[in-house]
Length: 334
Image (cartoon, rainbow, N blue to C red):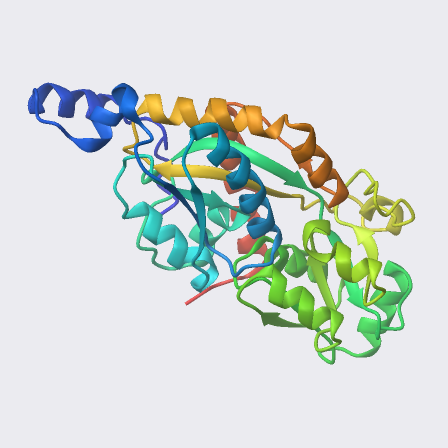
C-alpha cells in the first residue's frame, strides 16, 4: 500500500450506491443489517498488540460497556506482530459488516511511511468510527538507572554512547518513532529493543532489562507506583495529573517535543453508514459514563468523544506529522 496516494478514507458512498442499485433485492448481510437488525451476533475488536498495553486496556474498557449497550458481547482479540500490520491486515480483509473493528493506534498513521510494502491501504481500506482515548506519554527509566531528571539522563546517555538501550511496543510504534526523535533532538545514542506490545516492554523496563522507554501512564502506572519505573519528563503538555512533579518537555529543556498517544476504532471501508453512525452514537455514550472517565483519569488518560469525521481529521493530521518524523529519523521496517 502506498500512503502517498492521499485517497479519502471515507469517500465510498458512490460505490455503495452502485452496489445497491445493481444488486436489486439480493440480500447482502451487511446491507440488510444496516436496515435495522444489526447487531445480530457478537462483535470483535482486533487489537494489533499483545495483551496488557494501553491499547488493550482501552479496548477492554470500552468493549465491556459497548457490549452492554448493544446487547451483544464485544470480544477483544489480540493480534500482535509486524508493527501492527498483522492485526490491521486481518481487519482490512474482513467482511464489511460491522462485526470486525480495529483498535486503531498511532502506528496506523506511521507504518505506511516506514514499510516499503503493505498489504493494505489505510486511507482506502478503512473508515473512521470513533476516537476513544487521548493519553500523554512520558520518558521513563528503570529504577536501576541513576538519572533523576531529563538533564541527568541525557548526560548519562552521552557518557555511554550506544551503551544503553530503550524499549518500544514494536518497530514503527509511536514510542519507537518518538524516542528516535528524542535521540535526534537530545544528541544521544541508545539501542532500540522492540517488543510485541507495551505490556511486555514495560515489564522488562521494570525488571531492569532495558533502561528507558517512552510510554503511556496507562501502561506504566502500576510499575511507577511500585517504584520500579521512574518518569522523568512528559512528552508534551500539560503535566500529568497523576504525576504532578514530573516536568513537561518544555520545562525539562526539550522545547516543542510533543508525542501524545491516542486510540480509536476504525472499520473496513465498505461498512454501511448506518452501522458506523450506530457504533459512534453508542461509543459516545460509553465515553461519557462516569466509571469510564474516572477509570481513564486514574490511568492518566482522558476519554475523547467525537464524530467519525473528527477522528478522520486527526488521522490525517497524524499522517502528515509522522511522515516527516519517519523520514527525519530514517526509520525503515522490512
